[in-house]
Length: 87
Image (cartoon, rainbow, N blue to C red):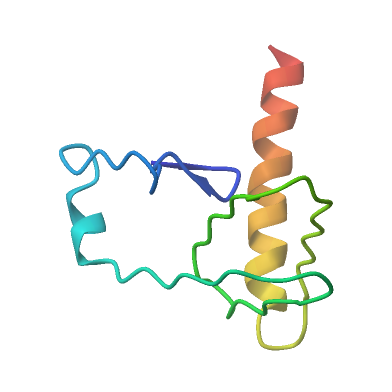
């Protein structure tokens, strides 16, 4: 189940009955310190949790390798939002 590029799967409280293929997933854990950055490969699902008060910034980079995918996703999101407005 995916909507607007987000999964309904919660890795903190996994529901493997609803998402059985998630059992095959391999989690990677990283604890970042002040000023550190983590680069996540394109198309990888990710989840983050702040262990302390912090400001987190997420930036999606679009380049020639993933431009068409991003255009498609944006068009799908826009179409869903427009259909809600037109109801």
